[in-house]
Each structure stands twice: as C-alpha cells, then as structure tokens.
Image (cartoon, rainbow, N blue to C red; front, side):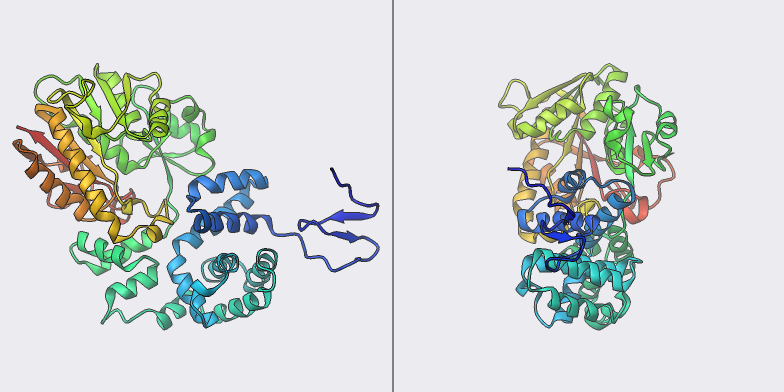
Length: 480
C-alpha cells in the first residue's frame, strides 16, 4: 500500500516524518547521497566480494547521481579502496582497537571518513560530521565512537601518521613502503624484485598505483582514425600505441564510436602487446590467427580489426560461456570465430588442431597485479597462495599455444602482472617442457620507437610509472 505524507509534513530519507510547525520527534538530516553511494559501493566490495567497477555504476544510477556528485562518490570509493591498508592502520591506532573488531558497517563508514580527512580537501568538520551521520544511519549506537575516532584521526596529516606508524625505511624498507603507500608487503616485495631491487623506483610505482588512471580508448584500425576519434571525444592521441586515445572524462559507454563498435575501452599497454604480435615479422603464410584466452574480448577486437585489413581470420577461444558471449559482442562484424572451450584442448578437438596457426596470443589468467590502479580491491584479495594454481594454468596454456602454432609461427605470451613467477619463470619453464625448439624473439623492436625503459630484452615489461600503462609483460616466441 502506498503511504502519503500527512498534511504539512515532509518525508526524510530515513522514512520518519517531521512536522513543519514543529517536529513531532527528532529527525536525522537527509543522508548525503554521494557519500552514501560511496559507502554502499565500499560495503558491497567487502561484504559481497563485489568489484567496484561493476557495482558503483549501478549504485550511481539508482541514486540518480551525475556530474560532480558522481565524480565525488567515485573518488571516495576508489580512494578508500586504494588506501585501505594505511587507513586501517590509522583507524586501529586512533580507536585503540584492531579494525577487525569494529562492526563492519561502522568500519567501512570510518574508512571513507578517514580518507576524506587525509586525502581530500573536504574541511575536517564536514568530513567528521557527514561520516558521523553516515555511521548513525548504518550502525546505530556507534555515532559517538565514530566521532571520537575521526577527531583523533584529524589531529595529524597523512605524512605525520605514516611517520608514527610505519617501520623505519632503514631497517624494514618493505614494511615502510607497504604502510606508506598502502600495498600488502608481499606485493611490494614482488614489485621490488621485478624492478631489480630498486626501492626508489618501487616507491614511484606504488605512488602511481594510487593515482586515478585515465581511460584509454582503442580506435579500431580500418574502422576509425585515432585522430578522428580524439576529435570526437575531445581527447588526445596516445603516447605510444598508434590506436590509443586518452579520454578526458565522461562515460565511455556513451561514446557513439564505442556504441557502434568502431572503438572500445582498452588500456594502451594491452593495445601495444596485441599489436606487437600482429606486427612481428613472419615468414610463410599469415592468415590463421588464434587468441587462446579471449575473454572479455578487448585484444580479440583489436586483432580482429587488424586481421580484417590483412586478409586473415582470428579464432577466439574462451572457456567461460558468459565471457565468450562478451567476445562475440566485441568482435561482431569482424572476421572472428568464437569457440567456447578450454584452450588447453589443442590437439584434442578438431576445431583446435595442432600446428595450424600462424600467430597465437596467450593472454593468460594471472593475479592482475599490473592493473591494481584500475582494480584497487584486488590488492587486498590476492594472496601468495594464488600463485601456484595460476602459474600451473599459465604453463599449460602456453604449452597448448606452442602445440597450436605451426613451425616458424609466433606465440605471444602476455600477462597483466609483473610478478617474476608469472612472467620469466612461467615462460622459461613452459618452453622447456614443450619439447619443441623455441626461440625468444626480441620484443623491444616490436614496440614503438623511442619507448623508454624497455630493459635488456628479449622480453618486455611495461609499467604505470614508466609508460603510463598497466604493467603488461610480453614475451614473443618463435617455434622452430
């Protein structure tokens, strides 16, 4: 039954009624909608294992938030998730208890409040009062506690809190960097190892991981010119990929070129590694291409557009049915055949024969440590124990790719992770176990001339702080 407000009253967000001629009972002020949206997103991430990039747009639509309000809610959501480790250490000290002992709704609200105090220009009194109102609505009885904790947080800026809580850089550099830049220690250690132990560069990488990344578009070759796309969206051509366009703002899903398939959202690093495979010199036939782990379809879309220009055809394999449907959508009207099957079945299914393909891409499932700036919750979910099953799968997929490629053909092994176990160790071990003669192709000349910091080869590791891309790894192998 629909309830209407009594004459002379107005509904509040909490559902209670206030009389204009004098309150019949105390009524809380309406909840701040951007902060409430950020809270709902952060709570969903921690309560439901949701992904912020999937749940937040839904919440923004439901709340009717656009423009500055949506931008503020987005900043609070992603900023809180990126800085979660440091915020929790500060809240633990300010409250005198481990954050695990704080009621989850109050804990998530406090995290958002602490982020405002330490990382935004929101006035302290506004950050405290709005967060206390939020706590009052989601954790009744904890408002006084929240007020006391946030007032303690506000007594220091972020640098002072780090100075108080982080272990000394001289005696525990990994621990210091982990707390100062809000990454788990095992990830800091993995990044440092991949960067040759350079702690200064590791710090620069961690800082970049905590910055809001730009949206990159890929102008599909043969369908739209990147300069034309840049003009259309008010953006700028990319620094390295010939197909990249940097989007200045707004929703990419509303761009006509994205809607009609002439462009898609794709990090510039992903464009570079896919293009490297397509452009690598190859002797003999060049009409049969394979994407062995194609979902959700970004690289398949770029390769399919390139294949259309060159008279080639791409077979895109994806084991998950829902991701295979995404690949089909991403490659519509392109010379692409989508197979819903396990890429490791090469040689066991007539649709995936051995020694048949000229170019093969293995964009292997991985920890995703190279895209933490885009998926900040991943840094808190991934564990070292995730590595053994992932690296086993990576070796098996790369082994299948080496069976699928013809003699003289090329295989590109790609991961969005710089962890050496997922990169150099996996490639070396899979090539050794394949039983085939495998030569490493120097990948550096396959990337645009003038790109800095590509290392000694033959593999390439891209970095957010060096190249402005996700931390993509690329190895190109030629089968003898």
